[in-house]
Length: 127
Image 1 (cartoon, rainbow, N blue to C red):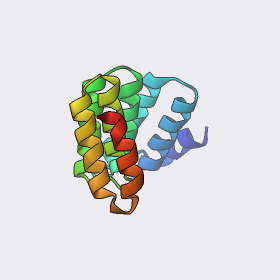
Image 2: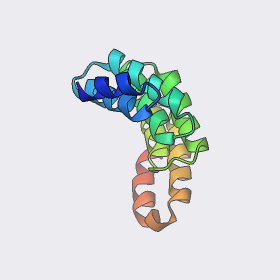
Image 3: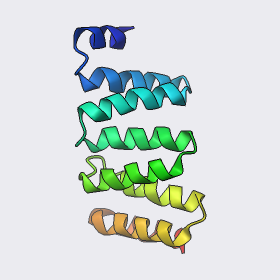
């Protein structure tokens, strides 16, 4: 209710759209979730968090090509939370594209130098 009221007050506030997306994600209503995340991403197109949320919604709807595009875009935007490459690797692994999964995970490890030892242990699973 509060998010809808916030949209009535200011339809250009990405946080209200994002909050509604999260609400519908919790309610396991991915089509609605996707709609609201799209609105949030349009209002804040260079925020990797919006793009990742959109990718997760696409993934839940088995729209894997769209999800992959979102995760790549989040990487290109700087991936504020550092999760896009992991999501990319896991999605490729789910699709049995092990070479792409390994490449994404390797790139993640290279970007996360502080976590090298843990990364290389986990990386072995992809090879």
